[in-house]
Structures are given as C-alpha cells and as structure tokens.
Length: 235
Ligand code: HEM
Image (cartoon, rainbow, N blue to C red):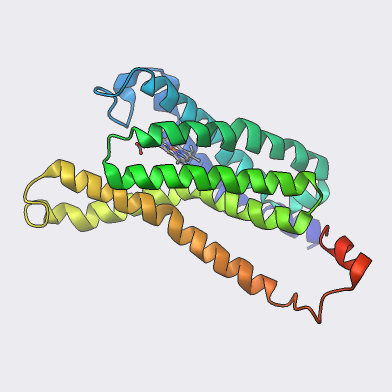
C-alpha cells in the first residue's frame, strides 16, 4: 500500500473516540437549559452557566481539530489545511476553552482538590499551546511539534479524565459507608479530585518520557553542523 494511503486512515480510531465523546458531551449544553447541565448549576454564581456552555463548545472545537493537527497524512499532504485548522485549534479552541476553564475551574462545585487540578491544568494548557504556536510562527518546527504534542495530549486528557471517573466510581462506591462514613458529597469530591489530577498528569508524564526517548538519537555527535542543523530543526 502506498505511504499516503497507509497513513490516511491511521487517525480513524482516535477520531471515532473523540466524535463519540463530543456527541455524548455537547448536546445537553446546546439546549441552553441549565436543568440539563451535568454540572450542578443551581447554587452557581451568575454567569456560570453561559460560561460553562461556551467552554464546552470551544472545548469540542479543540478536541475535533486536535485530531486533524496530529494526523500525519493531512499534515504532509495538505500543509495549508494544517496551518488553517491549527489556527482554529488555537484561537477557537484551546485559548477560549482554557481561559473560561480557568474561571469556571476556580468556581467548581466539586471541591478544592479538583479546583486546584482545574486551575493548574488550564494554566499549563494555555502556556503549552501558546508556546507551541509561537514556535510554529517562528519556524522552529521541531520545537513547535514537541509543544503541540503536549498541547494535544492535554486536550485529549478530558477523555482520560472521564475514564478515571468511571474507574473511581466503581472502586469507591462500595466504600461509601466505610471510607466516607456515608458522606456522599465527600465521595463525589474524592472521585472528581482523583480523576482530575490523574486525567492529565499521567498522560503528560508518559508524553515527556516518549519525547525524551525520541530525542535520544539526536546526540551532539549525530547532529548535522551549523547551517544544516538549522535546516534540520525545521524538518
Ligand atoms: C484541558 C483543559 C480543561 C479544563 C481546565 C477544563 C475545565 C472544566 C471545568 C472547570 C468544568 C466544570 C466542571 C468542574 O467544575 O470541574 C468543565 C466542564 C466540562 N468540560 Fe472542560 N476543561 C478542559 C478541557 C475540556 C475539553 C477539551 C473539553 C472537550 C469537549 C471539555 C468539555 C467539558 C464538558 C463537556 C464539561 C461539562 C461536564 C460534563 O457535561 O461532563 N473540557 N471543564
């Protein structure tokens, strides 16, 4: 099978997972009916619900465009499309979703442990994405690639977060009367906090390890000299 064809479908499994996630997550918020929110908004401050809706819409754009950005076939065959969808990913996805995530993250009804995770994650997500975007604008393409891989991993961490939530619900529900003394709110906050932190810290650590192992062959001895090195970093 020719190279381009082998690569054309490699993104399919990830895309399917992302489409399923968005198809499940987004519709209740498109009704603009606070009663259908999966986050309790009854006691929230004014303006919280519209911000949550905006966050989910921009987050969905970030997730869907993230798949396009890391698709090798699209990147190599249609670099112009990669640039255009990249701008959508950054300016209509991560930046608005992350900025709003920072605000609603600080107001979360799910307790202080998730609050800390949300705020740190939003700041790291914004910083990593802006750094990757700037590297791309400056044609430091090796740097651009590394920072954007981190950015996309953080974007996808919304999905690993939900997987951890299922794991912790199964693990901790039977302990409601024992570990949590019958306090359901405490159990929900524990599940949310654990899922929040594990959802993004673990994938980011694995990504750092993966990026490091791939950096290894670029030892000083193996690196091309002067002008060639600069050209190599734009490959
Ligand atoms: C990666 C940085 C992100 C941060 C810091 C963040 C933060 C938040 C916060 C604070 C909430 C309100 C619930 C709570 O208090 O925990 C929330 C809800 C939500 N977020 Fe994000 N979010 C991020 C990424 C995303 C992405 C990429 C999506 C993709 C669609 C997304 C989709 C949602 C949805 C659907 C909800 C509503 C809860 C639900 O219906 O399951 N978020 N997010």
